[in-house]
Length: 78
Image: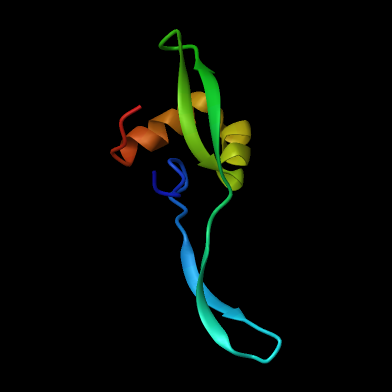
């Protein structure tokens, strides 16, 4: 499964690993993706979301109902 957040849309970004001798080699910066299970009261069921750390904090602030509405607005099926 790809490393992207269902809520915020964060994806891996690419850059360079720089050694002590200053040689550059390609590398990938992955977001901190975690799977979380939330109770969705309106549908009387649990939903499982793959969220970044920032996405988890966003759910804490706006609530799971609005977060699920945003995910569905992006076109993802839950």
